[in-house]
Image (tube, rainbow, N blue to C red):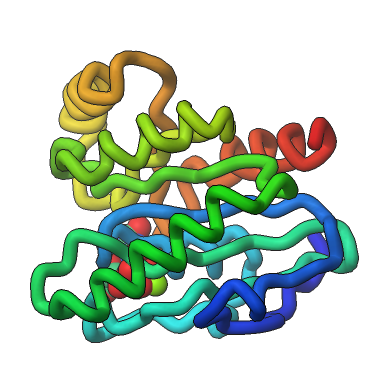
Length: 191
Ligand SMILES: Nc1nc2c(ncn2[C@@H]2O[C@H](COP(=O)(O)OP(=O)(O)OP(=O)(O)O)[C@@H](O)[C@H]2O)c(=O)[nH]1
Ligand SMILES: [Mg+2]
């Protein structure tokens, strides 16, 4: 696997990369495990910063794999303590990002394997569908559940999103990462 490098922490649309190569975006609630999964997939623990403080990151962090594609780590949503102004800024930035980014090959939507998707998770899924951005549901922190709990949650999470596959993953054990990479490679190839 190729080495990934941090490119930019985008705070306005002017910061978005312009290479025109495909992008895989990681979205989900604050603390869902986006940055941890990116690090695990990249095989580099220090690539994306893991927040001790949820909701602190208000920027979109871009990582590049060779000159072939980007990972975009979105700031998490649903964290109540960030305040109205920051929350507005977040929404605006994300909207700009999704509206005007034809390079997006896949949106990896992360949900905590132990919970049910929230209203915001479902809203995001609907929005991605309306923009015709392909999405992949990934349930994180699978290491916290037994096998039978995973099976039960897999059904509940899938149903909440209106059906479709859910990949269970763990940034601790690496479970599910091979499957996620294969979906990413396919999406990037077909972009
Ligand atoms: N046990 C376990 N813990 C995890 C896993 N993935 C993430 N965590 C923990 O969950 C917390 C949040 O992880 P992050 O990767 O920072 O989550 P995030 O979605 O990037 O959070 P924001 O940047 O605030 O939106 C950290 O304490 C991680 O160590 C996992 O697969 N298993
Ligand atoms: Mg993060």
